[in-house]
Length: 235
Image 1 (cartoon, rainbow, N blue to C red):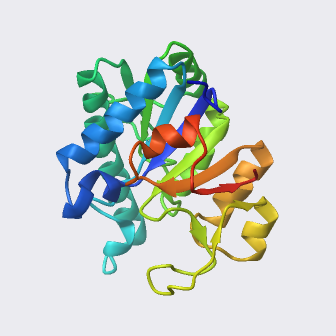
Image 2: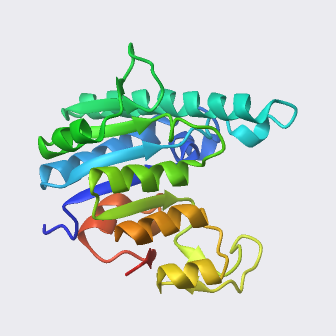
Image 3: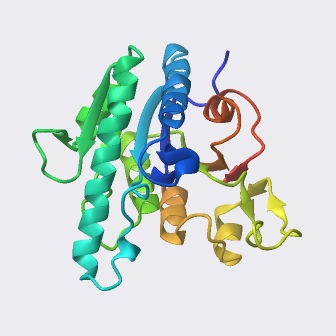
């Protein structure tokens, strides 16, 4: 197989790891991600991953909390998920490294972009936890930042819908799906699939964004090796 991209940044939501359960982990969901990543690595693709924490905690859940405290709790949830993914990769025979933006030396290395680039060049899967390390920023922004820092060719955004629509397809059955959007079109239409600031960061770095549904068979592999039914921003 011939990959369209040499180095990718894959952003997976925490909810995707919980499957139909909606909370915690679904073993088959985690194993499915690990198996697909193994296929990518065995075919020469360098894989970095940013994972969310929504299967345990989302900052907006803490309405009665101090916003900063709630966001730090969310960042810690992403570190838990990073460890779970890294463990799944190792059990598949892949070398994996967890790098965190928060100082948690016992469970992951502090993020350093040159070290991350070296690990990727060596064929290791690098899982980034802790978001940007700062409150008030989404994991979308963290994914765009890490994609820029590692020099990714594309940011793959695995979601629970099969692309970007002009309105919520779960609410509006007549919602129109986009196959390709320019960065400018995404911003002008005020679309919500990804934070505008994250899209603009990708534009400045010349990184495509590919949004697709994770629940499709071999969805991650297909997004890298063949035509996907998702939406490409900047394509």
